[in-house]
Image (tube, rainbow, N blue to C red; front, side, top):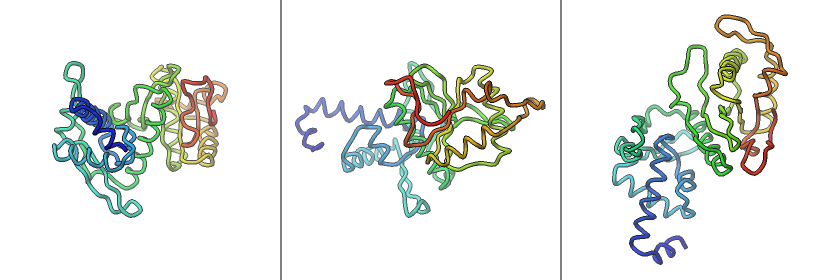
Length: 258
């Protein structure tokens, strides 16, 4: 059906659509660096796997992207990532500077793949619900000593600057004490307005909330600070993939737990 629609387009419209798909994908990979065909199909708005694959092959032939097959992710998984040439074609030279990050298969672990792809899916769902200005954590600079860098920061539909943590598995209590201290300081300094931890399931979300809100004190700049729930917990939110995003453009409310 998609190919039939393309045949009905004029040559100029087909070229325009082709360039639009390329630009959408390059803009997505400019920040996300690599992804799978399933996610890429959503990004460029193609229902047909065949059409999406053709687009990827053409862009690979033009050295804008490259692919690599991983065999350790429950069988095999093909990842498509941006090249240096792709990055050079993915920015607006009038307004932006190019990014240097490119797809380097040797630096990607299986755990990293799962987390990165989950975060991309969260981004796409959030943007459909009116979220804007999504920035991946690696673009926010180096991680401070004993600190934490969010997986992403984005603007909610109601204008809140939100730090987002995609939490596939639960870390140690000591690590969460460090993370909580970092976020409480960031909220106080108005670098972010709130933090949302997003987990794969509701059960993990409830357990994570119990762990983080159960912390009695944290250390900030060497000083022990007692946690006051009424003061320190009001900007901490917990939810799961199926209830994400917590805030959307259609309502002022939210799903999940605060």
